Image 1: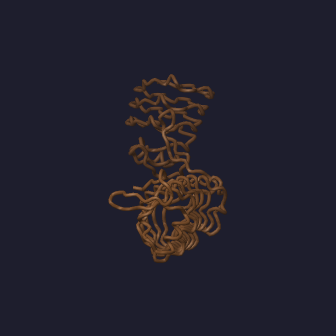
Image 2: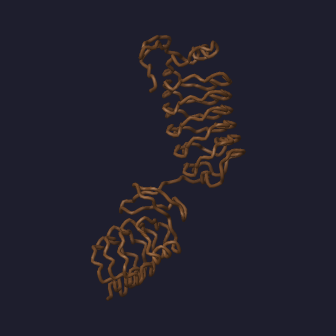
Image 3: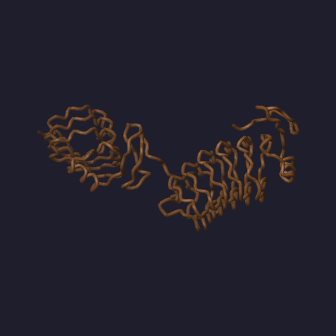
Amino acid sequence: GCIDCSALNIGDYFELNGDTLLVVDRAMLDSLVLLHDDLSKICVSNITDMTDALRGLIWFNTDISNWDVSNVTDMSNMFWKARTFNQDIGNWDVGNVTRMNRMFKVAKSFNQDIGSWDVSNVQRFQEMFRNADAFNQDIGSWDVSSVLDDVQMQSMFRGADYFSQDLSMWCVSNVTSRPSGFDANSSLVASQLPAWGTCYAPPFVNVNGCVDCLSLNIGDEFVLNGDTMIVVDRPMLDSMVTGGYDVTKVCVSFLTDLSHLFDSQTSFNQNISKWDMSNVTSMNHMFDGASIFNQDVGSWDVSAASTITGLFKNASAFNQNINSWNVSNVTDMSSLFEG
């Protein structure tokens, strides 16, 4: 883990696990760098600015995983041109950092897992991995929502030859257009880029216990609570129903018309209680003739539905409590339970 010495004074020595460590400030760190001293035996808890700290140290590859950088706010240029550095710093607490511009620029050997870093306060990522030739780690879960505009991400991965990770889930509401040079000469492809000007929201189970996937695209697959699900449109769903496939793990958030979906499907009785029906406006004859269907759909949000004509017509087995359904917008419910 990282060594916290914030309770000590600058210049203090202390023993820990058999090692003698020195509490340093930024000036002392800079001096030790010039002397090529051992930077693994220092404590940096009192340093707030790491700008240029290891810049240009082409020889540097010391294990500094124990550095406590929790008070650092600026890491600009920190490893710029540290060409041989490739140590595991994935455990660093960078939660207070606001600037990481050019942090690993031309750090040609660096390829460590930093996917768990909390970068939620970082506002500047310009050229962070520019010409970081080896870097190809999954940082798709980073919270980059504090970035204020496209300038702050310009050339972020320019020349990062091997970088090919999925960034499509990044929240980039304030970055309204593709930053200049963002992925130039990298291995990123269009499908891996963020949706500029939007904030990705993962699929979730809403208050009704139904699965909302409006943040995704038709055909996308996702895992939720251990289940692999797929986002469908009406033709896809029709094909699955007529083919007798499992439709319990589909997400129907994009559908507005489910009329006749299970019409005459006499063997259908799957649990579709988690379907998100909140955008469906027409449910005419949806279960007409689905004679053995008797699943609990009482949690469905049908408030957008305007027509439910013949919804359960000839669904002779159906006997579930749907008393909580909001049918205030329904204008036609004729033949609802006929047969």
